[in-house]
Image (tube, helix red, strand yellow):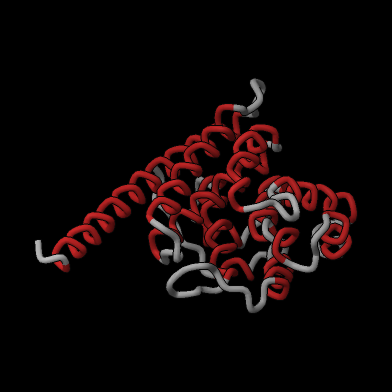
Length: 240
């Protein structure tokens, strides 16, 4: 597996196509915090999804690549990675509002519509209950576009990393089921790719599938270890 390369914000800001997208999401998600013990800014998650997507898409030193003229299909996916929570988590809560808001800096109206449609594909239905998300997300992941699947898997991987690094105040069972759901959604994305998939995407999904497997196996190990620690502490407190 390729080595995971972290991307500083300064590198993103050097790319003239992505710089305005970054500033837009920074403004829209201002003040939003992630669930977890440290309450990190939600922007950190968006950057992680961007990093994972770019690592999958680019087989080159990312710092130099971001400063170059990037292909439009990669710019589009990279933009969606940064924007993927805008409809779900901000006042810009429809694809029409998003398309209107970004049309001035993503290459015009048509490109804004395409990007907004992908962000919409990645958004949960308004008002969906937490307990219903898995039953909706898994089959939905089969039907979304190929480019949206790149971001969807990257998003799920980033969420699992957060569960390990910044544990939310969930039960052990909730964390375990979340990691399990990530594997199921990744499988839904990878197993339902079109038969005429362009060769340029094959290494992308190979990388994401392997990264998802490795991250989820690590998360399972961490959860088991922490659960055992809690069990022994409970037993000690009971005098056993």
